[in-house]
Amino acid sequence: MGFRPEAKAAPCRRNHPASAPALPKPLSSALLSLMLLAGLSACTRPTGDFDRAAPSVIHDEVMPAVGEQAARWRGDPVSKFNMTNDEELLRDRAWALIRPPWTKDWIGGTVVEFSRTRALPEAEGRVPPDLYYIFLRTDKFRSSDARYDRVASDARGDSELVPPFCEIATRVGKADQERLRVLESKSLTTSEIYEGAKARVWENRAVVSWVAQALRYRIKAYRTALDSLEIETPTGDRMWQVNTAIRQLEGQVRIAEKGCDGKGTGLSEAPVRRSRIFQSWGDERPAPQK
Image (cartoon, rainbow, N blue to C red):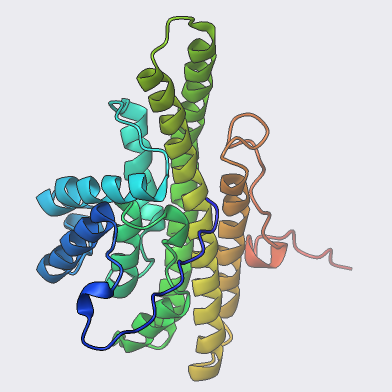
């Protein structure tokens, strides 16, 4: 997506409000609709049990319709094709990785929801890394060690979500390759089908790229929280757990950044090896006795 410089503002004239430049009709309608939706729902996607996405007419139908118009106005590809089962599953699994790591983060949740529904470009759906620590420190834990445990648990949970996502992303990528192969081999293809197929491939790849970007921001959030916790509530026996969990996540993120295809399967890259001091402690062979 190229950068579009803003048009120069018209000279200010007193008592002539009609001289102000009008917004393009699609953009003004989209902005008015988004302002209304923001007042109704704070634009964060509702969740149910285990913080899973809950059905919502506003977030599943209204906001995507508005976002589709906004994407068309920006010039982004928009496909009207029906989604395959894998394409729907790809987006469902992506949501758990692009949403804010702290589920009560309504600021980051609003930004993500605008991007998920395409009201904003996906590349702009960035959750500020410092918000995670802000919410972490305001939550009242009984033990200061619990905050370290929470960061380690969140990082490990993200690591476990990447392989299932990459499994679906790999299947979608192979299906897109077949889609493009058939598209090029057919001589009687309408322009609507041609443009729709190209747009759907672009959309699928954008989802995978967005997940990789979001995971990098999560790593920054966890690092920021860990650095801050070292100062606010220092402790020695929790540091290595958090560092190890973050390193494991970094290994999974490198797979996602390659488009989830790695060396051909999306899951073939070896996981990050942990230092021996962090595992099997106490299981070593006893020293020989003289």
